[in-house]
Structure formats: structure tokens, C-alpha cells
Length: 155
Image 1 (tube, rainbow, N blue to C red):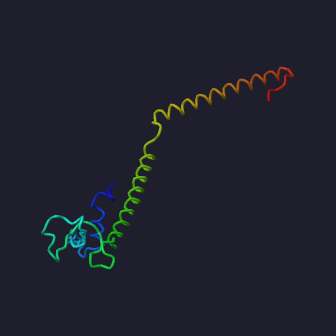
Image 2 (cartoon, rainbow, N blue to C red):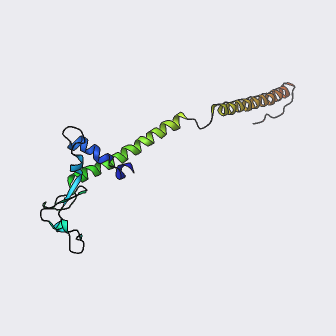
């Protein structure tokens, strides 16, 4: 949204590519295209009589070729530079957001430390209980074989 709805990217392109002194001096003039009112068709011509003067040029915000160009009113190279900068901004911004969210996801644990400690304690107690019962079973089996019982050992 920022890249396409604001004037932020065109201003940056002007500062870093077009401007000789790295300022916004001349930005407005650079961002306006020319239109010759004589190019209006009869149905679209405004009723304002002041536009009927010859040699008058209108200015509008766009990046198009002037009326005296071979490709009049076509998008010019400034437009394509700004378009590429906007696409680049979207990609860089998206990757930056992804990187920051990944760092935050890594830093913030899924399970709180107190809950993690309780889970580890319960696992420890369960293992201890299992070892204790296995040791008692082994002891009873061994005591039975020492007493002379030829009972089969469990597999």
C-alpha cells in the first residue's frame, strides 16, 4: 500500500536518481507531464474558453511523454524506474517483515518456562517410576530363580 498509494517512492527515486544536489528541488516540475488542450476531441473539450488559446499547455501529475514526442502521451522511462522501485520496495519490505517476525517468534517461547519445567519434572517422575517398577520386577524374577524355581523368564 505504501509503495503504490503514496508519493514516498517517487520522491526517493527523484532524490537518488534525478536530482543533482540530492534534494527535492524541482521535484514538482519533474513529476508533472504536459498536455496540449488542442488534443481534446470535440466531445471532451472543456467549455472554458481560456483553453482555446494557442500555445497553452496543461500540466498533470503523471510520467508521460509530451505532446511533441514521437510517442506522445506514452509512459516514459521515469515511470518505469519508479515502477521498478515500487516493486523492489514491496519485496524488501515483505522480507523485512518476515525477518522481524521470525526473530520475534524465535525469541518468544511457545511454552512458558514454568510450564516447561513442570513438563520436564513429570517426565522425570514418570521415568523414575518406570525404572522402579522394572527394578522390582527384575528383583522378583531373580529371587525366584535363586530359590530354585525354574520359572521361565519373561521376554
